[in-house]
Length: 386
Image (cartoon, rainbow, N blue to C red; front, top):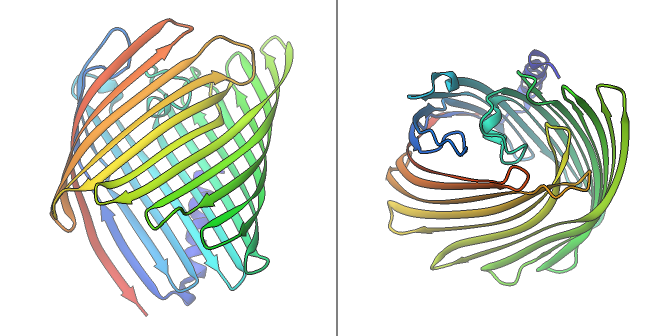
């Protein structure tokens, strides 16, 4: 999906829907920040730097009773005091559209972005030292049909690519299709069945891979009370892998396992608490498919009319799902923050972030400490109704 073609499609959708518009809005954010990190590259040879960043973002939205379309564009500009080679200015564009009728719900999401490979290292290869520009493109259509008052069926798909500016990583392509049935059993309980098929392809310097993943799962949502809600999904998956090295030698592997995603949300006078536990597959730019187990928790509370605090923590374990291997990577994140809202659209956020990464194959255990200050500014923008 070429960048200019993608932008042209989004612009065309906006243009053809003007006649049905009810309200147009134009808003923006800026959010300049300064951060000090004592181990920028998450390596045993610790190197520190101050990082300045600013993300000017503009959003145009058209909303009416049954339809909403939005287009967001901006730049993420970063400057480092100690490593000028890391200085970046990365563009991004996001498009979202939804249309609801009496029985039908249509959706379309698309995005284009450039970023540093280090920004996705935790989910990808764990390599925070190599600097490469990754260009990501994604398009995801969706459809839901209300069969009865209680039952609905859905169909969705996704196509995404990641292209790297250096040969340190392999370009990836991901295609997926999913379908499901959902039923509202009572006011508190709903559940259903989902089926998905995904294909991951990676083209690296010394290896190419082609992996097919099949997943069947059940989903449940239960509202315990006005304050408690539980969500769960559990299923089985089967992965068929095909690998070819640059000498033409091929290798086929097959593996199966479980996949799940559980979450709980609670709101009380002591604050809002959310917790999650999941296991999923994630294609990596080194040609592997990682199985990732993740535990996360987040707590937030409004202290006064102007002060609020937030605390988030996560643990992630990554292993290869395509081969028998003793290699394991563990990532820990812990981040408390406090926000002072001076005015409705102007505030200051102070945060601390602790990161740790353990890799069994390299026998390394590294960590970093970072403190960040962000000025939050949201421009109310322009709104036109007709």
